[in-house]
Image (cartoon, rainbow, N blue to C red; front, top):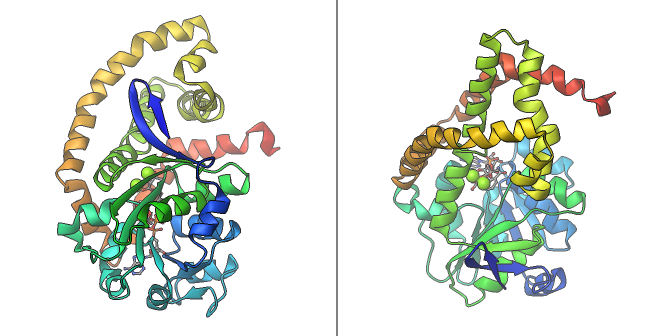
Length: 347
Ligand SMILES: NC(=O)c1ccc[n+]([C@@H]2O[C@H](COP(=O)([O-])OP(=O)(O)OC[C@H]3O[C@@H](n4cnc5c(N)ncnc54)[C@H](O)[C@@H]3O)[C@@H](O)[C@H]2O)c1
Ligand SMILES: CC(C)(O)[C@@H](O)C(=O)O
Ligand SMILES: [Mg+2]
Ligand SMILES: [Mg+2]
């Protein structure tokens, strides 16, 4: 259906238009092969299985995630296979290796993309940056995308809680005439209630911007800046952490999620409202040039190239972990670990 967002009309598919029963009917003869069992793999594979679809998982034998798949109930030789075997058996190949990992597996996936199959992504990365990835699908398959707007961990948790997480969807290539039904059925199958229409290019550029920006990069940056200013002015770690992070995640963001920023503001003191109304624009003006620089770096393909280069190295996991450890060991997040233990519900 068409829905108005402000004054702009957009296409949104709803569960009412495309119920789960219809999704099951559309995919009843398909074998959905989820390739990769990292973060999105488990969330999507388990949700699809629990929703009654025919799912198998492809993963490298002997890897830690193979063991995780076994622990999650996938049975070797029945529903869990080596990647190539899963590519052969699947009629829909859900390409959920890391974006850099997809480059290495592409020749194998391509070999098994026989006419009529579907190639499914959760990111527009591989085909948008085909000059860098070499991912150029054959013409007689569907190339589709369902990108959950959140972590695979949340996708699973919210499904288990009976909620669900919405996704964007896109069709890059309709090789069979069934691409629309397949993509929407899969989006409903992984647990989305609503599916927002996009295309591969818009999905990848907005997603790379968002995660580098307010969703992850910018938020850590702004937390660090405020925490450092409070600490250098004599505030204790717990006070600095509470005023920077804890109150935001525990008290104020849930209010924003529920009813928007103005409503959160309205539930704070008029003193706070006065100050926050005065200061949001200077913060916007100070950070906007950084966001412009970020978007330009995404648009030029530089962000994709950097991600491919670093995440294609053999020791990429070790290097990422070392950088995550630096964050974990910072005073702010060390203070956070203690503050989290002191949440009333933890006692
Ligand atoms: N992580 C998320 O929550 C999330 C959210 C939305 C979209 N996505 C997209 O979903 C896709 C999967 O992301 P992810 O974060 O789940 O991936 P991930 O980094 O967790 O990796 C998934 C799997 O790929 C395997 N892998 C990596 N390199 C490999 C190689 N060379 N050969 C064989 N296997 C290899 C890993 O062992 C792992 O099991 C990506 O396109 C990503 O952009 C992820
Ligand atoms: C969960 C995110 C940040 O939305 C996703 O885009 C990812 O790449 O993991
Ligand atoms: Mg992303
Ligand atoms: Mg994202």
